[in-house]
Length: 233
Image 1 (cartoon, rainbow, N blue to C red):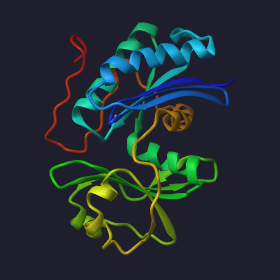
Image 2: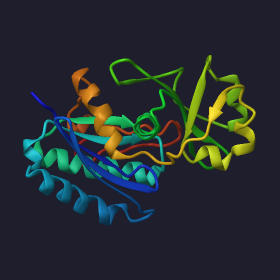
Image 3: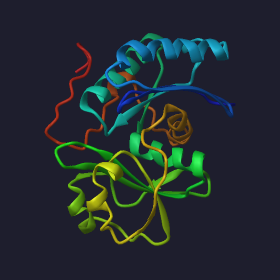
């Protein structure tokens, strides 16, 4: 049976929605800082209308779980939870860093990707990914929030050529240029829900779907507290 998965992401400056129906992806993506709350629901309605589907006909709802902007991540998970509660759908949290790795494959056929999002405060959100034979991705080491000049102490073995993705490479170009890796500049700056639905089908097959009240973000910074919807603590 083919999967029908909706993905929503507002974790960065991008606002994106995508619908996977079997092997087909219907997606909308717009660079829209500070406009996520007004744009994302009309995007959801649009992709569902194009597919001729209603929310309650889907198998799962995926969301960009972070890391990213604290406000953006909260908006995304709040909207996704509202949709999931209304349609009684399970939820799948998808890494924004992994989504950029998949985006790099979609655009450049890259199979080794180093993703870095500018986390402000002289730090980056970092994830290093290798594509597997089945099309899924595996993180090398772990996702981090780290000062770019300290990354060399955490970098796992990085043989071969790696494509860069994310805003961190431009924001901290001098520091990241010191990494002992063969890095090639890529064009993916932000995560896209079109890539999240690809990752979501693997997560669904692995049994990673959770109830809407159990969905949670990943900030990487431990000082941030997340509160679920009222009555769902």
